[in-house]
Image (cartoon, rainbow, N blue to C red; front, side):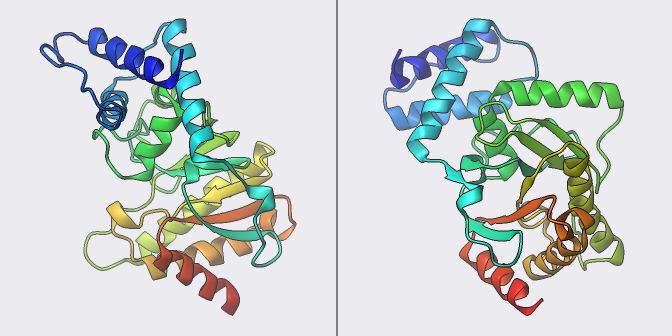
Length: 260
């Protein structure tokens, strides 16, 4: 199968999986429209098992897409200071020990079709196995994920080995001291978990900024301070990459790291 054939198979399989929801829905003709449709269908799919054939074709499709986007090796990134790098790019294309996902409290990924959040991107390009793995964790836990905690899963079709899922604070109005403490807890919990699991490099997204409304500058100050004070980073057991998507955030992190 080529990519076009894999994409068509996956769309048809997802439509047929829930015929009551997709009655009358047809596959668009253009490749771009098909890509958006497939992503949207994957985003809304509930965490239920799939056939081995579906998983095989999905995995082949996602890995070929990754090759097309290109993979960045964290080990090749320049270090701003000992053991710490900044990289602006797509975190789903970064090869490292673990990438950090800014999750919601359900920990099942973003269910909004084609949403632009990092949670959506990570679950989309990891494949449906990630949502299933998260559901198993949440079923065992028996309650929503606490803000400031962290969980670890395999990364499946992503180039990283693992995904660290953490729920950052949602800022409503002025930032409180509790908001700051919870954001710092996200970074500590991820590093603690990575250290226990033997993960030797962690790429942090800008937790709680964007959709959760934490001010970018303050969030970056908390991130840098918390990471640099962590024992696993100071003793060089874990290398850290601050992954940013916006040029503005890259400038903030570079300035803060230069000043500290």
